[in-house]
Length: 469
Image 1 (spheres, helix red, strand yellow):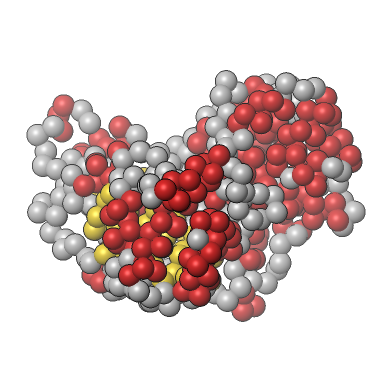
Image 2: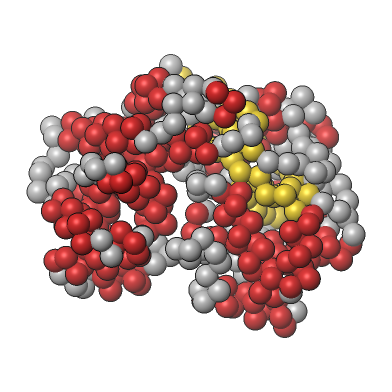
């Protein structure tokens, strides 16, 4: 924030009268997306006064410390081509350092707590390629040792299991865990991860979770870039107060949920959330068309010298790759959603082009490129395999994997849960290198010589060409 704003009052519940709602939701993964999405939906619910969120950070306490200074209030900036609009969101009643597992256990074991929401990133669930918990992962091994010795676990998954054990001991009854990470069938992913870790620690706890915890699947959608100093200044200029934790998002928001809420939930439908019996068509539409295009642009765009989604989409080479991938994805999406609702794929694609082209949303490709080995497993592989099962090549989806392979070799650092393995694979050459990289994403694809050959032949597609001018 610039010096000219230093004299402005800081946002808090005295400056902006907003009674703290009682905590009934616990969230793990306090970050920009949670605040632009689940916190915003809760704030917009007709019964918002009854549903407060206690949000816990992940790796660092910074976000909790900053929000605590403002009594949990923050400004949501909805950034459209036509200008900005500003909303003070008051649903976060408590912001807590994720390392405070004692407070997490207290809140999860409280009878009033009805919902736990998660935005802990795709990689944090530590599932193997078989869809079950990878009990050999170093952080899983470490958490099990800490749980067994009475220590405080260090990962979101371990902390959640620790807190659920406290709820079991308190007799507080059932609740819902709502996964809001970009994973296909994410409720099942969360169940497998949480129950797997619980059983490995205490079989009785695993059985209690199976009987008392519902796992809700969701499809979440709202482009939310990282907040910059310029965004903080924009809030000060427009609103006349200092906000150290604003969040910027596109005007569009979408939330589809499927599952049971045994202890109740907010009226999220008041803000536009949709509740369905079968979520898979909605998940795949979003994972393949939006997230898949994002990953493709993240790798192809950076290889061609771009830094944001809007820049990459303006490059005809990147746009053509996205359109061809969308053609493959669309061919494998159900034309009817749950309850017979039309997924309206052509309109969804057109809307994505408009959203991606919003140059006022600086969605950085480097942010999207993280955790590629996990993301490609859900965004590229299913489309490629579906195409090949129908006698087509799947080349457009395979190109996303090839772009990741090229990017992983060219980047100075690769942020990925398998970064060490990616680096080792990149020390190989030719088809052996491609096979090793594919094995990190999908072992079955790596065992298919035709797939390895296909991806190998697409290497260098974005490296060889200069960016369009």
